[in-house]
Every structure is written in structure tokens, then in C-alpha cells.
Amino acid sequence: MEHLTIRDIARMTDVSSATVSRVVNGSGLVKEETRVKIQRVISENAYVPNPMARGLSRGRPDTVTVVLPDISNPFFSEVVKGISAIADENHLKIILYDTDETLQRESAFLNGITPVHTRGIIVAPVSDSDDSDSSQLGLVSDRSVPVVLVDRDVKGSNFDGVFIDNIKGARDAVDALLAAGHTDIAIIAGPEGSKPGRERLIGYRNAIEGAGREVDESLICHGDFRLESGYQLTKDILSAARIPTAIFSCNNLMTLGVIKALRENQVSVPEDIALIGFDSIEMLDILGSPISHVARPTYEMGRIAMQLMLDQLEPSIQDDHKVQRVTLTPELVLQGSEVLVPKKK
Image 1: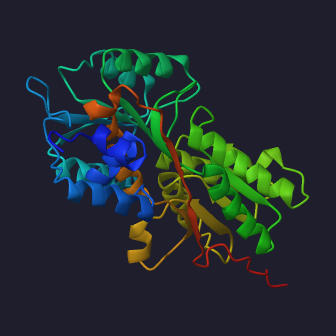
Image 2: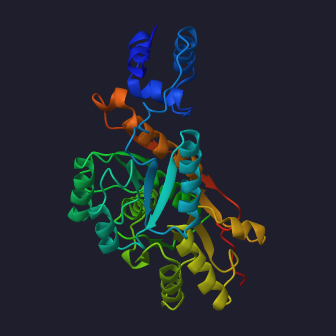
Image 3: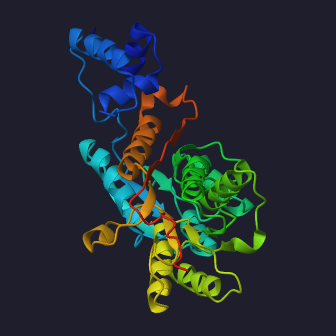
């Protein structure tokens, strides 16, 4: 077939254009049976992807902008690696911008974004409960700049995005602490204005209530996903009249803050207090002090986010594009720091 397009292949294989685009661009988001069917049609018709059709049209930049709240966070660094891997395969460049978890910085940056500056925006918004985030990204999209969310959502979102099942991840972690015999479990939660912060707290509550216990509100501490908040809140926990036997920390940087405070106060994990964190911390493994944690397919989140962007940049599917929101499942990795150590009498 002459001048075969992605839409032609989609019609011949009875799948969506987005699915064909994923196969063409090497994404792993397609069932093997479907992938084989599409590849057979591609081979039989000698289809060759046209880089111009992938959005690299004359007069348009070959860059995708990645807007993140904290590029020093290893989680986001790994996400960027995944984004870059797919971008490289498709001859696109990545530009990074750090909002420093600040709505004002994020808003000021997005306000100036037009198709002249970038092909599209992949963003982890500062907040999903603030109307300004939603309206700002809506304006970006209205300027014909595609938007893909990663990890965090925005209020009333109708954007493509890739997320994690935060509720399950948090519940699995707290269930493990309960199974180890803990009854007083403190949580250092993230900001309630963010999807991860809010959902991980829900998972904590679900676990406690699922065990037939009443949630002790005094054991709930709200951090801001930064090391300093984990540090200060742990100092508060250790100075309380009743010190919990376990802490669940809701992101890697706050977990580092927890560990810093515990070591300053000569509190050992898990001999004196148990600890589970959300996200792995490779440095702790290297130092021989592994912490039980909720692991996420971080690199894959980046790859999927970039693939969702490519789907939007493909001219042959822009007219019939359907919003795609992907939720991945985390894995609980137990390494001993969740153990309840009986106190000697």
C-alpha cells in the first residue's frame, strides 16, 4: 500500500491509532498478540515511519519540556531517564525545568509556553487541588501544546498521564507493619494538596481501619516531600509523650530526614523503632543499611509518559485522540526494617 499511514494500519488491524503508534515507537504498553498482528501488517506493507509525521515538522522545535517539582529527588531523576530513552529513539531533545515545589514558579514558567518553545509539556504539578494549576495547564493545551502528567494530577484533569497506585502502596506498607505486631504507627505524609500525599494517607487509614483499629490522629504528621520536613517531624515524634513503635514515611527525601533525626537521637532501626518508606533509596543499600520500602517502576513511568506524548504528537491520531491515563502497581520490598523488636524486660 502506497503512503501507508498509522491510521491505515489501525483500520487494517482493528485497533486504535494510538495502539499502532506504541508499536511503531517501541512502547511496552501493547498486548503481545496485538503487537504481533500490527507488526505483521507493517512488514507485509513495508511501512516505514516518517520522522516528519512524528511531529518534527519544519519550523517547530524538536524539544519536549519536562517540568518537575524537585530535580534533585532521585525518583524524578529516574523518571527523566525513562523519558529521555524514548525521546532519544524518536530524535527529540529534553529540556528540564525545576519548579522547586512552588506554584508561583510553575505558573510563571507555564504562562510563557507556546508551540514556538516546545513540542509538548510533561509535568508533575505542584498541586492537584489548586484551581490555578488546572487552568494554567488548560491554557497551555489551548495553545496547541500537548500536556502529559506524570506521578501527580491536577484538579478536574482531562490530560493524559501516568500514575502509581499510591493507596495500594501505602496500605501494603502499613499492613506489613501491622502484621509485624505494631499498634502505634506514625505516618509522615506528604502535602494534602498533592495526589501522592493525599492518596498515601488514605492507604494508611485504610490499613489501620481494615485491621479493626481506630486511627489515632495524633500519629499523622504532614510533611512537604522534602528532607527537612521528615527530619523536623521525626524530632517531634521522638519528643512526644508516647513514642510510636513504627514510622511510615511517604517519600524518599522525607525518609532520609527521618533517618537523620533517628541517628542524631541514637535511635536504632528496627531495634528501637521500625521504618518503612515510600520509594527506594539506593545509597542506603550501598551503605549496608537497607530500609523496607514501597518500590515503583520509576523508569517505566518516564517511558510511558514520553510515549503518551508521542501519541499526541502523531498527526494521524490527533483528530481522534482519546485521553489515556495509566496507573501502575507498586511493589512492597521488605528488608527487615519493619520488624517489631520485643523490648527486654
